[in-house]
Amino acid sequence: MYMIKKNIHKQILKKIKEYDEIVIARHIGPDPDAISSEIALRDIIRLNFPKKKVYAVGNEVSRFRYFGNLDKISSSELSNNTLMIILDVPRWDRVDYMKKEGFAYTIKIDHHPCEEQVCDLELVDDTSASTTQLITEFIYETKLKINKNIAENLFCGIVSDSDRFLLSYTTPKTLMLVSKLLEDYKFELMPLYNNLYERPLDERKFESYIINNIDITENGFGSIILDNKIFKLFNVDSATASNMVNDFNFIKELKVWAFASWDERNNIFKVNIRSRGTQINEVAEKFNGGGHKFASGARLQTLDEVKALFKALDDVCKENK
Ligand code: AMP
Image 1 (cartoon, rainbow, N blue to C red):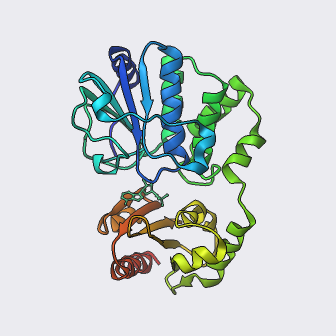
Image 2 (cartoon, rainbow, N blue to C red):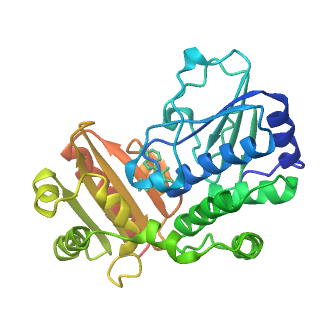
């Protein structure tokens, strides 16, 4: 595990103070933690340093609009003295929108396992339940101002990435920080949970389709391949399965499960993998993927590669039986 540097929060704040132009990015195919952390950090910097130009970049995802708008800024519009902060992403090739080149200084704040330093300054803690947890800690440590809207976004990121505190990354610190946010900003929970968890009935029907058709091996590995025909049948899209993969936790017969969804726009299979104890990220890394010990993903070109990944996942399940 990466050692957290002493005074890292102060060092990050010092760099934020030093630069007048700041770009904040996160990983491709963002989840609520990635989106809410970049929007929250942008809004924190804008609130505390109104004269700075701060941009949260990356492709918009319509179902996450409730977190706030992203900014459109191309690299040619930026000065050559810009600070880049990447969030919730361990490697540059997974960063959405901006390239590393051209930035005067780079910072990473992330909770993915990663041994390699890729930015000038890094706050990496793979024991943290989420990147929003790291940012919440950062604001309480540095005493930066926030407001109710920022607190709500941080709260949603932490709730979502810990899967409502079900995942083992949940620690006393996670609960202490959300408790502090709630105590200090007194926001209502139900509207936030509606944003995060309300689903159309079609999606629940699609979930039932997966339940009824998932292939489960004797080693406790469940898998399913989802194509356009199925998406059309249930009026869903290629990203829908990603949003529900966590809901297959705690099914007795499933120890590891993976959904491969055909993404027609990008001509790839997007694979979501989850586990209840068998380490999967090392397998994902061998198949052009990666992620956390128990929550990983991969992007694959062919059906044969998908089948090979499924076989490798079944093999690790067998080893861990
Ligand atoms: P997902 O299944 O897309 O929610 O991703 C689960 C975790 O795996 C997240 O932490 C992602 O950042 C990571 N991940 C997903 N796809 C990839 C990939 N192709 N390469 C590396 N990490 C990935």
